[in-house]
Image 1 (cartoon, rainbow, N blue to C red):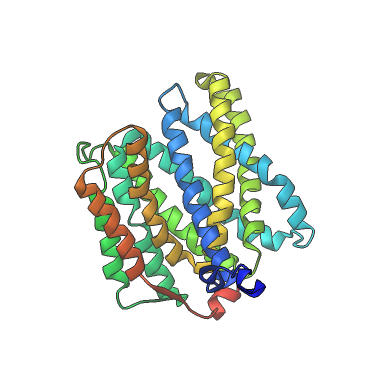
Image 2 (image 1 turned 120 degrees about the vertical axis):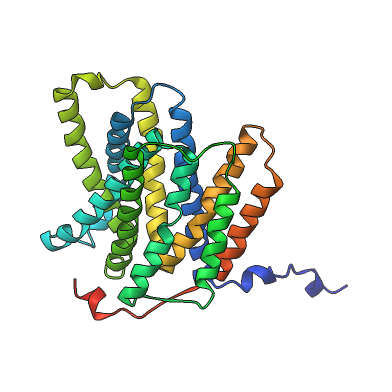
Length: 316
């Protein structure tokens, strides 16, 4: 046997994947994993005496502190100015509104109700982006979306009822609209600026606003009590997770578009329930398994093509 036959051949499968596509997939996977980790941690936190408002504010402060070094580093090549601040500040408010309303909704509605309603967010994003001329929806997009939506419903535990009160209902619908417009505005601004820089910028703003809010709340709302080690511990862990999840999500959004990433992240909801069931040693039913399969198939049908940048996008 000649020595040339002993040379290890390169991996043909990896060679077929362009580096840019591979990196894009890694960002998407990171967004899915980190995005799914946060609600699991919060769910465990609510088993104890976790106060939502204090926890939410601490989470934002820690998230801002975590990304601060990265923000300062990127800011050297992307100097901040009043014009950019005016664009980023409303986006940060939308992000803050979405997170707060989701927490309030989960306190007042059943989990199955919240998940079902929030799953309609990609439809809102698709309709608005199509109207703005940013996305060209594939012929089978809505068929794929319907498959995903049906899959999310099927994958949920039907032992839990659709229940809640009007406060939770208002909160979850506000969360849908704020999340939808947050993704659309992020899609717009990341065409002009680095996505990681904008993500860290948002969390810096959230951290500053939350620091002001927490100090004011503790001073003027004695009923909140003091910050306990339990609040601080979960705030730190979730703050780190939330900041990293947002960076990976916005990076993935800048690569594939708001509509496409919104469809892809629909796999989080049945996947999260499936993983949680395994952790709790509960065997998923065959209906739930079919639901997860529906989402996977639906994502492949719901194709989206990003349109060229329009005057509307570049003029802000």
